Image 1: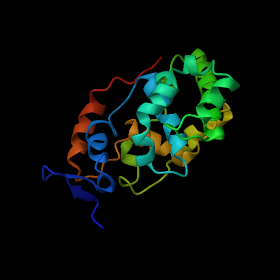
Image 2: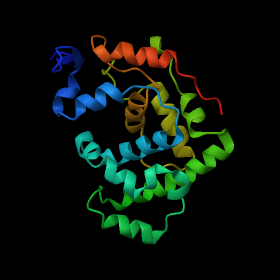
Image 3: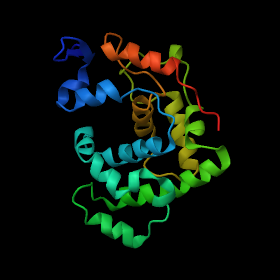
Image 4: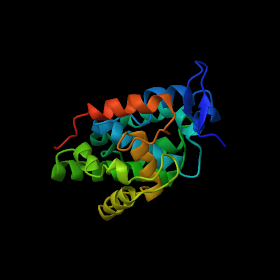
Length: 203
């Protein structure tokens, strides 16, 4: 199977775009571009957790509902959620109604607060796990990496939930901690330029 698929503009993109029409926009404007905003990083970790056992298409279709339900993934607000909030969310048909995953987001919001207090920001902590690109496997041939395994292990040590190494690797791909667009994808060069100009957060 080819690693790329042609878009309507006739240019090559990562083959997974062909799985759903809405993937093209997500792929071209979001996936792989570097992110240094704590709330966006927390959102993506949370949504990757919700995706476990489901398809990204399901989560992407519900993303705005998730954002409304979790106050834009402002972890300071989510950390104050109570059991009443969990019960409310279990009745929200606009999101994935899975108690364990909802409770994990609330738990992880509290863990994110602790991490920010110790490390300065969630972004500074995450970007410490940026790998040497030369040491990575060929794009989209792996589901984990040494760095995703290490980050997953550290997050679990800090009591985060739903952050296995495969979930963390998908998060790193999406947030631009690695550039995993295939070599012939037209967006790969755009992402690389964005990564080159990206100021890695230190606090």
